[in-house]
Length: 107
Image (cartoon, rainbow, N blue to C red; front, side, top):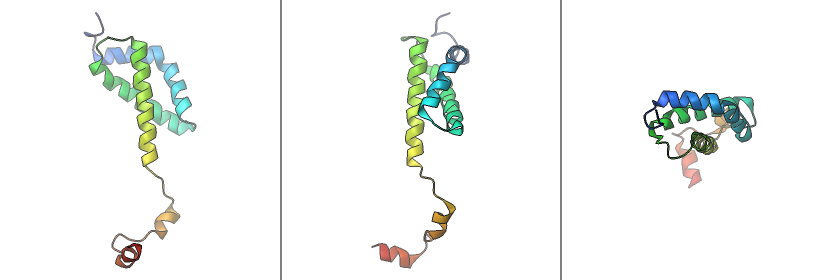
């Protein structure tokens, strides 16, 4: 059976078994903290599983896996950069959204 006829889950399981250690190394290269590595690896595996619905076999399985993993890693980093963590102290110092005096002073 060629890759066009193989079900998405079967392709994913083969890719995860064959390239799992390499995906772990890739996650380590993009994330320095263990929690971030685990989160990224989960994102990569989910993206990989989803991607096999559109896999036509026009490239090697290895090429597909690495391209999807790279794209997932980049997307995750971009998403995290957009989300800025704020400490509780910073939140306490922020004006309420209905603080008209503060809003007027900003103009």
